[in-house]
Length: 222
Length: 222
Image 1 (cartoon, rainbow over the protein chains, first blue to last red):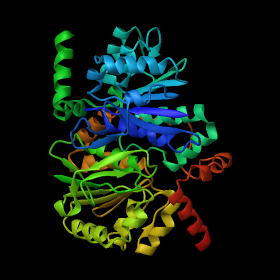
Image 2 (cartoon, chains in turn blue, green; image 1 turned 120 degrees about the horizontal axis):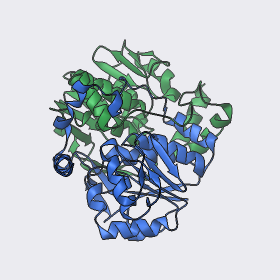
Image 3 (spheres, each protein chain N blue to C red; image 1 turned 90 degrees about the vertical axis):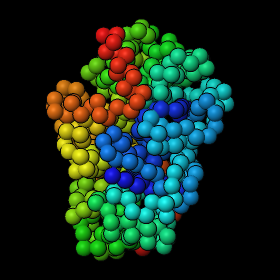
Image 4 (spheres, each protein chain N blue to C red; image 1 turned 180 degrees about the vertical axis):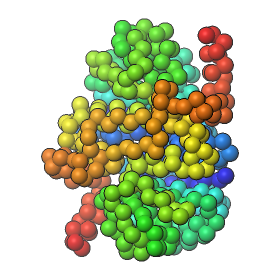
C-alpha cells in the first residue's frame, strides 16, 4: 500500500505531518513524500525545510494520495504538472484525500466535481468553483473514495479515520495511542463560531505575506 | 523572542511540528530548528527528512526551548554535547519545554530535578530516575518555567498554552483558529485506559526497530 504525500513551497507543515503520523505505523503501508524535485522545500513561514524523496513522475500511481494545504496550494491548483499528476493518480487510487487547502489541487484536477467536500474555513466557498458542494460544518467529509479534511490539524482526525479504512479500527486505535491523541485544547475554539471577536482581531497580524495578498484578493472580489 | 526546536535522528516529527504550528504565527517570535549539524536528519520511520538550520552552538541562549521526543531521544539523553547545551540554555530561558520523550533530555540536563513532569505514556516511570515526580494523568504539566507535555500530539495543546503565555490568550486563540484546532478524534482513545485490549494487541506490530529494542530492555528490567 503506497501512500504519496506531496510537499511543496509555502505549504503548511502540520497538514502533511498530522496524517503521516497517523498512517506511518499501519502495517503494510509505505509512505513517500513527493514533489517537483528531490530535495528541500521551505514551508509557509520560511522557517522549516522538509525533504522531497521522489519526484511526481517517480510515483505516478500511489494507492493513496494525501494532499496537504497551505497558501502554496493556490499555485499548485494552477500548475498543469501538478494538476495532471493528481488527475492521473486519482484514476488509480483506492483513496484520494486532502487536508486544508490541499482540496484546491483536487478541485483543479476535477476530483471534487459533483462531490461534497471541505477545506480550511477561510477557503470553503472557493470549492464551489470546482463543481463541489462546499461543506462548512463537518471536519472530515467522505464522498465515495474521496476524503477532504478541514484546516491543518483536521488532518490528524482524517488520518486516523483513513487508517481504520486501510487496516481496521484496532490498528487505528493503536496508532492513536502511539500518538497519545486524546486532545485537550487549552481553549474552546478552533472554529469561527467559537472564537471570540477579540481573538479574531489578532488574525491580520498572523498572516504571512502570501496570505495577506490572498485576503486582499478575496475582499476585492467579494 | 527566539524559540529553539531541536531536530535529531529518529525523532518523531509531530512532536516538533505540533508546537511549531501553534507558535509560528505569534507576533514577535522567531523559531529556529537546531541540531548537531546543518542539513537533513531522518525521523524515526526513516520516511521523512527535516532540515536543521542552525547548530546547537550557533543558538546557545534561546528564550524558549521546545524539545521534541521520539526514540532517538534516548541517545540525546546520554550525549554530553546535547546535555550541556540544554543545561546552559535552560539557565537563561524564559520557558523550557518538552513534548513526549523530549523530557529525557531535560531530565539528563537536571532540569526536571524536584519538579513534576510528564512524557509519553510508555516512558513516564523513567522520569523518576531524573529526580522528577512523574505525572501520568495530566496532558501538560507546568512547574515553574518548565512545561512538559505527554506523547506526540500533546505538543499541540502545550504549544497553544505556551502561545498564551508568550503573547496573550487572544493570540493563542487566533493561532488555534488558523490551525482549525477543534479536534474530533474518530475514536475514543489515545490513552492506555481508553484503548481496548484488541487494539493494544496491535502495538507490537507498530514499533520501529529501535522501539522494539527499547521495549525488550524495559521488560528485561521490569
